Image 1: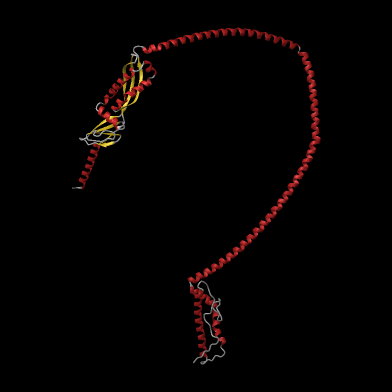
Image 2 (image 1 turned 45 degrees about the vertical axis):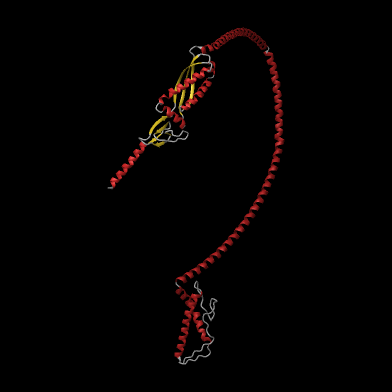
Length: 462
């Protein structure tokens, strides 16, 4: 079997499973309940063996052909109330209202409603109307018209309480019950309002008469005020005439009064001139006596302040000079110390660099450095080797000139041996720097001698 066929079979199996799952999966909407029958189920709060399952707000699996699924609506419903009633007084009335109800949200209410209305959900409103109509007639029969008019809330509460048990058995709950109006075919309610209407009409007529009286009084008061105004006007006119006469008499007396006023003004002006003259003399005195005295006092005070400020300035200058001299000397001493320390530091650094350079040279080319040191000290080395013959009292040469040559050859051989020994000492004793060769049996650098020559050497040739 090819791979493609296997893949096709697997895909078909998966697709079949998805289709079967879609056919078996049912989801309850928020406003409905799924009633699943066909197998025994146990639901909390219900009796055993109910025979159907309730699902709300979630999904569930249903076996097609084995289980049946139906939906019960949980939406709000309403029914209009049109009930003919008779009161406790025997007066017929027509009550108009509305009831808003729905299936309860608990499983008990859903189960009760499913058993009664699952296939007759459209008849719920009619059943609720029948229940409320009967209870309303019973309740209205125990009330008077006055009670119903004055306290409709009482009628509503009694109706809801009376229908509560029956609505619970039906699996329904009442969200709202409203009594819109109460119709009175006999006119009883209208007659109840007649006394009140007559009283209102009477009060209206009394109020109108009172208003007419007040209007008449207001008119009479207005006429009286008009007459008073006329009288006041005449009095004012007479007053104005008297004022005119007084003004004319005053005008006739204006001439003499003006002359007297002129003389009075002259006296006032002369008095003012005298006051001004006195003020002028006082100001002259201020200018001639007081201001010069103030000027002299100000001059003396200014000179004293200037002398004081000068002395303060001199003292401050001396203090600044002393402080500057001390700071300069301290700075010079500090600079001198720093210079000496820097010179010592530079000298030490130079010596360290020289030692470091010689050590580096010795490490890189030891033979060359040793050879240079031996060349520099060769005269002293030869002198030290030849000093061995200085202590010889008698030297006997057996073979004449040949013996002398052999003697010098041996001396040179000893010098060559000393040369090798000196190189070894220089290399071993001070590998990081140069060491001076020994001179006269004593080391040149203060170390112990490597070779000690005897006090006397006897050379025999035989």
